[in-house]
Image (cartoon, rainbow, N blue to C red; front, side):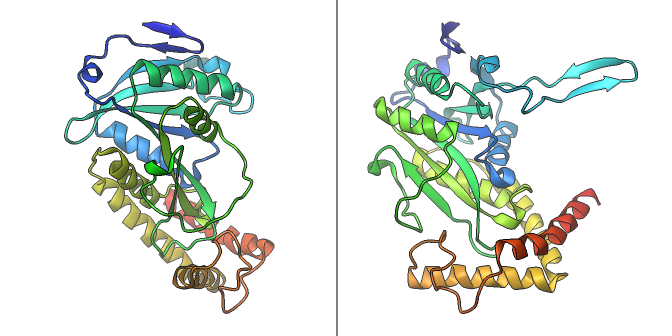
Length: 309
């Protein structure tokens, strides 16, 4: 076991030592960049379909704010029985043709982002990682009735495999995962990733269609392969559930139809970008943010109830 600042790394991993060009490292952190739990669903699917072992573990106490995100524990009658400690770990997994790769999962660090990035760098260099690929998702003004869109980003243009649907420059809230990609590029390591666009009105619910779409793109850029049929089936069930809720509300249906018009006009006319709700792509006006909130409050409550049933 090699100990570097904030991380402990296993020295003996024979599956990786025999690789000619180094393994891939996938990253999927819980927290800010996970609308629709897309990356959590994707990483969970990978873990369920492969044996795994931890090859690196981070000093989670250095990164986690316990009072902001209190881990759950169980109290039984008169005593505490267990505690779900947060873990930031890198696991060794294999895809469906037995190619080994690495997967970093756990809570997004609340602090010491630079220290976290440096610790991941130690993992990358220790295992001669050839490419780091991140998975994330954000809520967007897109309808659930259209194909999932993904933003592809990378430390070098040669790593990009798809064109993004919008161009330009925007200021966005940062994340530990995005800072990691930036720093890896500065240190001379290849890194890329995908951010799925989740319909904003279902962003707080699991959205397996986005998880499947991300794994498909990750497979294209890495050469890894997975069977996503379980995610596809879950996506069909989720679409049916959402469609049922939309059909029961004229107000919600009108909003979804407005988003469909915006989406279709954007793709047919090449509007400036999907972030601009005032691009003129719509034949009519979309509701305001307050109106959207009021209309979807009942919609979300319906999804909650459906989940309980």
